[in-house]
Length: 168
Ligand SMILES: Cc1cc2nc3c(=O)[nH]c(=O)nc-3n(C[C@H](O)[C@H](O)[C@H](O)COP(=O)(O)O)c2cc1C
Image (tube, rainbow, N blue to C red; front, side):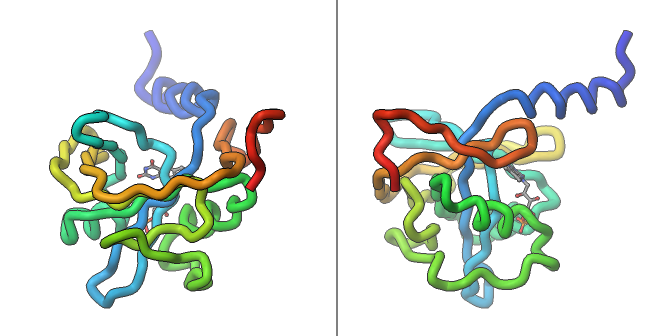
């Protein structure tokens, strides 16, 4: 029988084998400043209507901001944007401010400029489960661009290269 501690460590190790893209979830603080959080627990949910989900730890600042504003932006990063992913993965009190040149707006939400795709979402549901909340967002605007995605695997950033992929 495995102990709770060994399951917890093996759970982390197992998910580190699952290659994902890397996104930044963006929200707006009460002051009007843009807030971001690096997130890989995102997925598409429904085509009609267009829905996506993001899973956010309840202790994250982004969690409260999404609850308060009812919206978020989601940007899929390209392979040259690992520095942006690292910035928004650091604890908010130690990360400093992002260069505003990396931020743009898509409809009603801030997004990451030059990301390979971005969406503006309105929250239609939040399901608290364990220590995270699954936020379901209805997509109100989308932008798609060319470029190779940033990939997260075994706790490292890398790239996925293919002859057929248009480089950013
Ligand atoms: C590649 C990567 C993916 C991450 N994905 C998530 C995620 O899906 N959900 C989450 O709650 N935290 C995730 N994190 C951790 C947050 O980015 C990190 O805790 C961040 O500091 C939270 O910022 P906030 O407190 O300003 O919202 C991820 C971190 C990395 C490096």
